[in-house]
Image 1 (cartoon, rainbow, N blue to C red):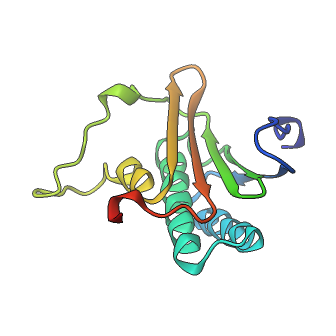
Image 2: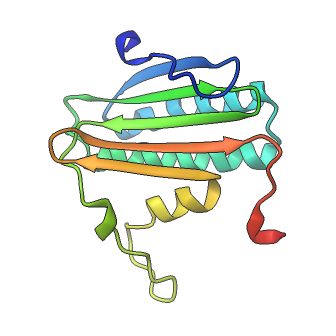
Image 3: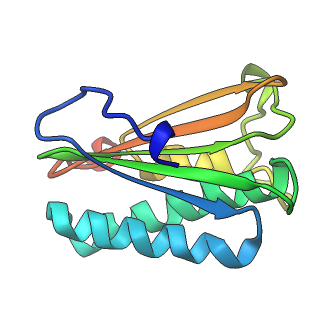
Amino acid sequence: MTDKCINNGEGLNNENVCISLPSKPEYVSVARMTSSVIANKIGFNIEDIEDIKVAVGEACNNAVLHGCGSNCNFDVRFTIGYDSVIIEIKDEGRGFEVEKCPIPDMCNPKEGGLGIFIIKSLMDKVEVESSEEKGTVIRMIKYLGKEDEAYN
């Protein structure tokens, strides 16, 4: 995946770590553990590391479930900044209309449909781009030392 892993110039001292994983559930843990090691390297506390791991797991689960099937790969890219990590999970699946993604009803929870909601609640910034021709990219940012504004 080296040709897809180009420094995008955001932040200072960016380093990129890129992995391409088979679109199978057993490989989601590889992305989760990689995110843990990278977040620890940057200096995130244990709670933030766990949040990052859960968010990465949810995004990778989406790539496996809604990507192009078990005969292809999904890509995970970590951009390591001095005070943040940007994580992008990209699949080449059928895509979906992001603006029509419903907000889950927490009073009547259903199986499935919570992934994007969970990711947004755990990360500082989340962007989702999806189209039928190109699949889906979930871009998540976590800033070092940023307090959860919901609790302030």
